Length: 255
Image (cartoon, helix red, strand yellow):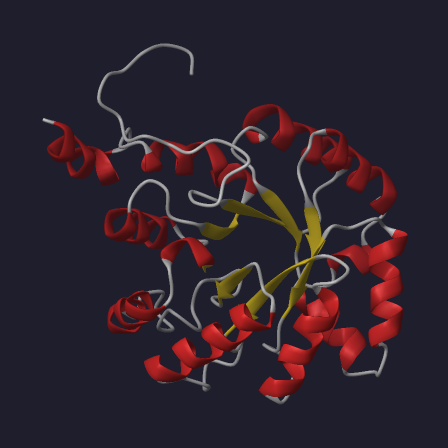
């Protein structure tokens, strides 16, 4: 930090298990990646190349090298996995991970239907190759799971070998753990946290009110995902109680 302010929340440091921030790269240019690394690389724990943007993005090798040289892991979005699976190309997908020397992979079923036991088999197989992050929840706003189902799915995927589970929200933040208005489904989150350790969940929270809500609920070191590159520095100020949204929340904890 540039100077000292007393009694701020303690933030974990990289590499960390809690307070994890996943950035959504939806097609950044090489200069954009350099800007992200310069301004917020120290707060960026991992980068997701959103859905299947890696298929159409130019200079993919150069982009991956920039992230690698900065010590920031990268993975392809879960929709890329699903695009291979629905076409019967699982082994091709595995070779793709090796080709680009990726250390993480996301397994999801937000756009296609995969029997859950089959999804868990994919997790079990891929965990021998990479660190698996699996996503729970559908991108279809009409598919609403009961809290017990979310818990059941998350538990099974963690037991199958997922390092962390992502609570689905899309890049827009209006499905899954949110209503179509973007409001958090509070009862669902509360129920999930009775059974799943908070450090095992990455909550997709692309909107500032969502970030604020989770930080107030869980604390400065909640795991958050689908964060836009331009929101990384603002998010850190929210985590530290240095923005009006959480200023009193953390101040009251300290004084």
